[in-house]
Image 1 (cartoon, rainbow, N blue to C red):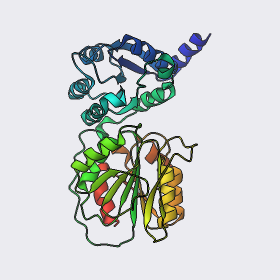
Image 2 (image 1 turned 180 degrees about the vertical axis):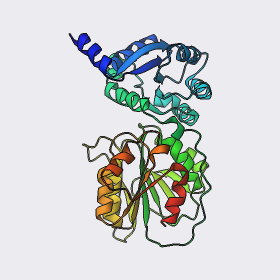
Image 3 (image 1 turned 180 degrees about the horizontal axis):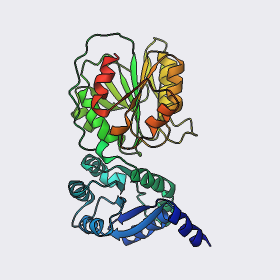
Image 4 (image 1 turned 90 degrees about the vertical axis):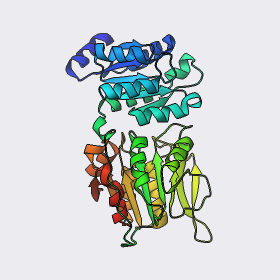
Length: 354
């Protein structure tokens, strides 16, 4: 009966065709089972390595590929690089963080849309724990705008003009497509940026410190993973650590310092854009610029409302440069965006508001 209902639904609904790539036959089987639980996803084939995956893409024409990183013959980074050169295709990396952290970032640089952390212990029950997250990311990848992820040539940001002094902090929320977008945006901002910049980027635990170090290497600003109790100063970019919310508060001397906490526990994401934005508005009142960029879901909408209620300003990334126009759309549809800006112009827009 369930199979009949699934076939009827698939006949009347657009179904995403998925290719599963992993060198483990067991993982291929379990990932296929997980994806098949959604009536909107259909696994059309599997591949054992990157070379076979390239061939299967040609033969099966999938809409989305899930891909391991550590594989024989051609690894995941090699596959992403080769496939993007042939025909851009949404690819979701499925990886063990402790073994392939740098490879994940390299795959994202090469054009992968998103990634999910595979449990280190490949027991069936541990793998099945990631079912909901995997299904969500694959469905999101199916709607990804790859032209917004690759091929964006940012213009050189203009110099600071010493303008209005209306902002004391910039807070930014970003998710799917975020690592690539920030690698375009942050290096355009000058070392003499007169305010701090705090960022929530949705990433699994084990990646944010490495990502912050890589972003720091290519940026005139100092970029680091946020630690607890650190003063929030101009010219510093703080990236919230995966697994903990980033907020801020004033100490007895009037300095603004960071606070990291696993609470609140009821947010869809940890760290949460909403938590950061609300904290910034409470701390800096109306002197906050909030920026909501590419990503799935609605994280940032409630926080943007909080910033606006305090008299602050909200920018959203324009739809045509978002990999996934989810988070910015939620803010725009709620009537909270003061300005919509493409990725290539976001640095200048931020500087003009200083």
